[in-house]
Each structure stands twice: as structure tokens, then as C-alpha cells.
Length: 166
Length: 175
Image (cartoon, rainbow over all chains, first blue to last red):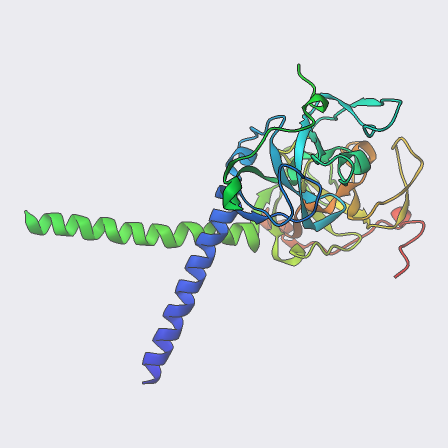
């Protein structure tokens, strides 16, 4: 009787650990579902949209300009941010806000990326905390799952003039 | 023949079952709890790699103790290099967020470490590529905390948090 209960408990514990570890590997290396909040990526991603992010291109260092990425917030590592990559290392980016008359340009340092939200007027991004190290990027958002009317790949940046072409 | 096939199938099944248990558990353990790594370079002399190039120390990296990004001044931590994301660097934490620190060769003489950042330095000043070159680093880049030296065996020891007295922060954050 006791052995029976013990055996069941151990089996349950083993299955919990096994599936927990499989889930960790999947979320860490393949991708996961992210619920976005906040207005900074409007109109591409609205508040409380559900999107799918894949982590493979981040591990293989194939993030490109114009991709939307999930990254750790540089000023608070426990929260995440969701922004668009405007410049990779060595690119020239405009660091001033669009309403400024004087445009200030600077180069993105090595190993960093320049992130900006699509909603330039309401977004805390690289224009306030500077270039973000590549190591903080966790994944690339590839398509939207919810709302269903908007299901599919994400729209291109409405501020594409800020992404410099080379 | 049928028995042979059944045996093969059973063998493959058992192998797959074991594989799907062992690999995720190992990967998760190495990611979340602890792993070991070899220290290269002279930037942490004399704490690590005191012998120069002949021997390189192997350290135990504890991931579990920093899961909430809690570090102390003086801890030896490994982090993703801000300049090269493919590389990990191992340094000593000198100052936490809010501290004011006197730099050694940074572009500014005094720096207040911003929120969510730490100031890291190698023990071998001048031979270390650390915060004096790239500034404060974000806590999100933190990888693990080095707790023990495992190899070579005669150097087996714990690595206690040790802050050089001359590198104390000028003003600690008011708690």
C-alpha cells in the first residue's frame, strides 16, 4: 500500500520534471507565445495582442533590420520590451525624435542594436536608453495569433524612412 | 524474424524514451542550475588563472543563485559580452545600481551606475576588457555566478565575494 503510493508519487514527480524540462527547452530555444501590452508598437501590434516569437534566428545571429524583437529591458532585467530593430552594429541611426528640428545622427556600437517602437511619440526605446546589447534580445516576433481578424505575418514598419538602407 | 523486428522496435523505443528524458533534463539543468566552464585569458589574475598561459582554471558557474538578478559587490560573475554576443566574459562586480564609482580609464572620471546596470572589472587592471572600456553593463546580460574553482585539483577552493578596498564605491545607494 505504502509502496504503491510512493511509486505513484515518484512517477508523477518524474513526469513533472521531464515535461517541465521539455517545456523549458522549447521556450528557451525554439519559441513561444507572447502577450504584448502597451502602446509602443501601435499600429503594428495593439495592446494585449498575442503573437508568436521564435528564438532560433536569435541563436543563429540572423536578426535583420526591420524585424520586431522581444528583448530584456536594459533598465529592468525582469521585464521585457517589444520593439523594431532600426539599426544593427555599425549603422548610422537618427537618435533624435521626429519632432526635433535638429537631427542628430550616431553610429550603433559593436555588438549592439538600435531599437525603436513603431509609435514614435509614445515609446521608451533606444532614443531614451541608447543602443541595446545584442545579448539582451530573446526572440523575433514572426506572426500574430490574436485577434483572428489580424492573423498572419506582421506589417512592415510605418516609419521605414528611419531604417537606413545601405 | 518477427521476433527480431519486435526486439529492434522495442530497443528503438527505449532509446527514444531515454533520449527524450535525458537531453531536456540535462539542458535544463545546465541552463538553470549550474554548469562548468574553462576560464581563458589573464583578465582575472591573480584570482583565476594565476599561472598564466600553461594552466587554465575550470570554474563552477551557479545559475540558480542569480535567477532574480541578485548579486553582491565583489562577486565573480560571468556575463555575455556587450561587444560580442557570442562570447562570455568573467569579471568581478564592483558596483551595483545607484552607486557612484571612480573609474580607472573610462571617458568619465566618476560614474553613477544607472538603474538595472552593474559595474564590472577584471582583477588585472590594464589587461582586462571591462566596464572601464564599455561602461556599465545591463543586468540582463548576467549569465551566472562563479562559486568554486574545480580544476586544477590543488587549487580547489570556494570563491568568496571579495571587493578590493581601493575599489569601494564612493557613495553606496541609500536603501
